Image (cartoon, rainbow, N blue to C red; front, side, top):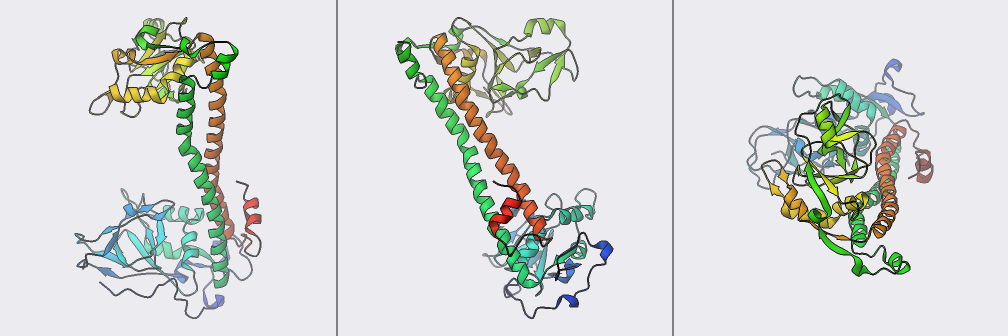
Length: 448
């Protein structure tokens, strides 16, 4: 293998004056640039490396394939080149690696070690007038990515050629300005990544917080003060099986549903987070089925067959529109003098219920099953109906707040990607404010 070269990102040499670079004709320039900047071809600041090898005798040699790239995180791993025999590209620290094959097109990063890579990864050197980080950020620009996709060729696995990349138009600022822009981008992105980590932590903790709240509900902790005020003892709670609390556990219709019809047929995919998801609906016109399986407000549905992770999920039907239910669901026809539907729904979505379902499910090749007998054996804590109503009231309030927090965190995550794109767009227009403050730039892109 060729001997490693000096880090290309650090080899600046003598800087070329802007007028030594052929400028792009005005009609091809995407937008006006600040004074001192020029539109040039990317080939004026990048050159394609031609180093290749079939010698993989070094056991420590690292190999990067397209599978080692992630969309937003660049190179996230590598493999040993031992056993690799076909021709591969050689790369060195500081060179830019760029995936040219869909669906990995536009995945890229700066190498930080010597190695070899797939020939579906282009290897580029930065010339002395360009900052490698600046160009690496340029590859994230929307208009460049659209250009690369539009100019990729092939039927089954479209590729973009080295020539297409090097022919792309590129906004070239003075070299020192490139570094100032890179510093500003990194500073702003670091703040956004910090916000992203906090938002992800909120989302990761949502199920834990929800489980803790439900645990307190069904051990009597949430209604301790209510019992004191109403002079009710925790000993009034009873432990009873689902079978003893239900008139029946009834399977849904086995008949095939249709794309259009008079009545909705709820299926396992419509049970989401304890509620009915009214998207992706199926229908029935079968009057016998509609009469036999018609749902009423506060009916509780249990998913008896699904993947190992999802079997046992439960949701409450609130009467939004007429509906029946499919055969993979069980209607828990509970006794109204012993249970309320919302209380039962919360119980069946608790950690205790999920743990029970996981222990009793029967696993098949592709799906797991919990039959009515196993469901009926589940034992739950049953307070009086007034206390059930109080528990539901408290849970509705607490979990609504938790969902609001989750939605806010999800909104932050959705906005971070847009903010990064906006920052990059401004950076390559010379509008990032490299002589201003990072705070001004963030405020101009929206607050976090």
